[in-house]
Image 1: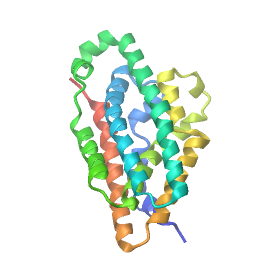
Image 2 (image 1 turned 180 degrees about the vertical axis):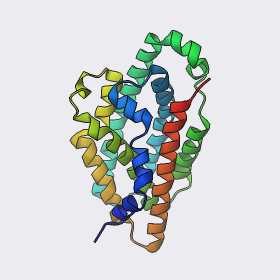
Image 3 (image 1 turned 90 degrees about the horizontal axis):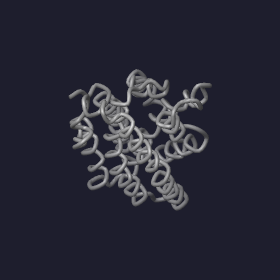
Image 4 (image 1 turned 45 degrees about the vertical axis):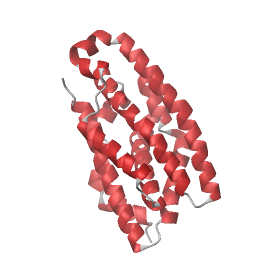
Length: 229
């Protein structure tokens, strides 16, 4: 008998494949994503990261299992250190090396860091999770999908021979979203979803969240990839 999440992955197989094979992440993993596109993506993703910490906190608040709560707490500490450092180092580096190009191609993004409309829609959803959502099943499903998508575009590329030779701005982002520790974290979230989805209402909410997060991730990638000034 299939687990509930397996049925959703089967049902939305094509859309899920689209979410993990977008040109933005494909080019990032190949080390050919232009700095302008990488910069736009990271500026937008940093907004997501900052608000996402609150989603972690909300998940921890709603968690009804002591052992699970400890794992969630430890992961918050990890992302506050490693991911935050990546944003700080990479944004500083590519701004210093490509400033002239950015001033000619994305001056507004460089100076004002506007939030793209599709990204704002995603941030609005995160705000809903933080301030209005009262369902652990719902918020942990959203977290699982966010992390699962990143694992499944990064992991296949982490073992390729060229990955270790890529510049830090590419290789470190792949490393942060692949490997045994990250895979175990995503497996933990999956188990939490399966544990918390009990009723028909839970299943309906989980499916809606599953699909909504897929759509938001795809739109996020696409909006950053096609951004022009």
